[in-house]
Amino acid sequence: MLFYSRFSVFYNNSTINNMAFLYKSIYPNWSQSEFYRYCSMFPIERDAKIINMSKGMQRQAALILALSTCPRYLFLDEIFDGLDPVVRQLLKRILIDGVVQNNMTVIIASHNLRELEDLCDRICLMHRGLMLMEREIDALRLNLRKVQVAFTQVPEDTELFEKINVVNLWKNGNIFNITIRGTEEEFMPKLNALNPAYISAMPLTLEEIFICEMGAAGYDVNSIL
Image (cartoon, rainbow, N blue to C red; front, side, top):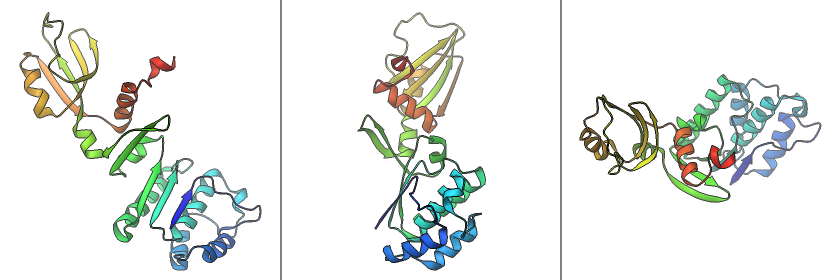
């Protein structure tokens, strides 16, 4: 059973209560007890007209109805848009509980990568209808690092980092800021061989990974401008 939620369509006189009555007749796994439980968790009036609610409250109404169908697969599109920080955290906890306790699969389409960073275990990047990559987030982070390398005196070698899989590089004086594809075990010995004064390596955020991968696909600020 599938349930898709974005800007759900409601009749002008729709309330959560009468929509629940409709959903109960449509979805065989509808749970009235779960419906009451979710209504108590979200700050929303069950008899208020949904069409008169704010964007964030309409989204909460759609979530309550969707979750009460006890779906096996839950598709959510920009679901955090319009929700305040407290409700966003509540939604994350509900989704995690649904995955752990009910074996529910949740698929979220979003441009807000920060919201997905501590919630999803797999990510898929798409560009112009094509899938650029799909893998576990932990594996993705492991394979990309942002590294800062400083030299007391920059070596004259014009191909200084040729033995390292450099994705992009930005130089400021004697300091190089590099995005490297690979693990620290692979590239650190090669960087240390250059006798730098300082090296620091950190994992990339999902947003940085997105920018990096999109740039490799020809979608970056320079191509847009």
